[in-house]
Length: 260
Image (cartoon, rainbow, N blue to C red):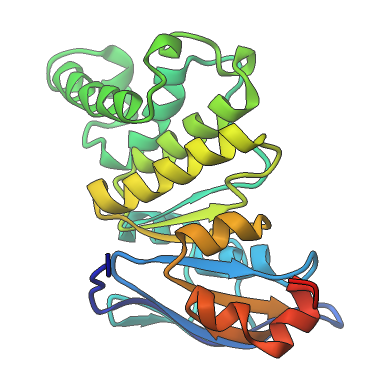
């Protein structure tokens, strides 16, 4: 089945990033279309996480611009990016291990809260009603990710694969238009990877969320991605459909290996 994509949602234009004399990214350009699953692949040190860090405002590139919904930005901070509708998960889990699943995912609703911190602390009147509404949304995400039995469990006591789902849930709680996933399958066994692949495709389909992901498992990338951009030593060496990338000689040499 051919999937339909919308207009260009996110556009990366000639991004270059250096740390001292070390070039992390050199003149990188690509776009992401609405409702697609867009993968970024490459060997370790290729610049993949640096690219995501530029998109979500953690790093400020020395050259180039990023456009979101046609509006071009030279520099953005992480809060501005989140407010525009771009959420991020991280390779290393940054969850609150002593807090429950519900409370961890609720932290993703902070930007949606209209009541101030003082009103939230009192839990009275409008604040109480607002929290009830936000919790209802969080419960929907918990059901969607099939982690109902763990709702009140401290995240640190859960298996790693389920912690990854909580991390995904917290990002979804922001109701992002674009979801940046940094190695969502890292450290998972085969069954956990299959589950996470299914959830990513369901998020893309049911929530209508555009996905940009970094992933090392080539089987996963080829199965769930619509288009792939390939980085090597901070430069772009390939961009296209899984079939096009798979048959690109430069990509084969640099990343996939001739045997593939």
